Length: 243
Image (tube, rainbow, N blue to C red; front, side):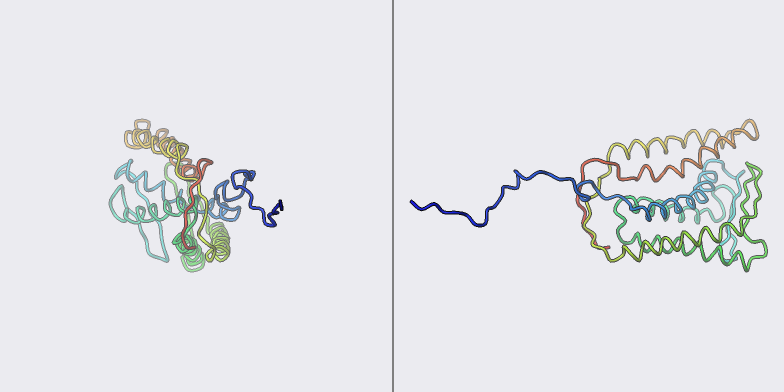
């Protein structure tokens, strides 16, 4: 009897050891994107604070900002409050998409936001007679940040463009941790602060301290929002798209 030898043995896939790969571990933002998202979050504070105070504090709160010499502002929900809503939606979208796969149109939204801030800072530095000032009546702040914001916004814009240039043509097949219980809990905790902020800001009996506490709750609330969107470890799902 002649014994046949298989020259091309086929191994059973179930017998192969499962080695952890980057894909099985799930996609997470690289170090450069993390830096850009940190900068994006910092700019989010400047939108989130007047948005929340205008909503919860009422007409007693006044805010203002300028884009290329055009003044925007209002009291409470009046005036140009719509601008804060647009900025907040834009930034929530950036922070969510940047943590959940960073697929198109994230690249274009990210570039547009940071270029807008950088060019506006350039305009206000060299063409606005008042430069760039940061005012906070609650904390008694009135700071000239003209020569701080221009380099900071410029650096973030450059980093954003570097990341976009290196990632815009990459394939969109990525293993991503789906939204899980950790995300829900973190987002719920941040949103649970809203009733507390409402009581502190709307029913101010001390004339100062409750407003200060409300502000100091609102700032970290904005800074910690990306943690609620972060792809925490869990069951991995594959998502395909075009980058």
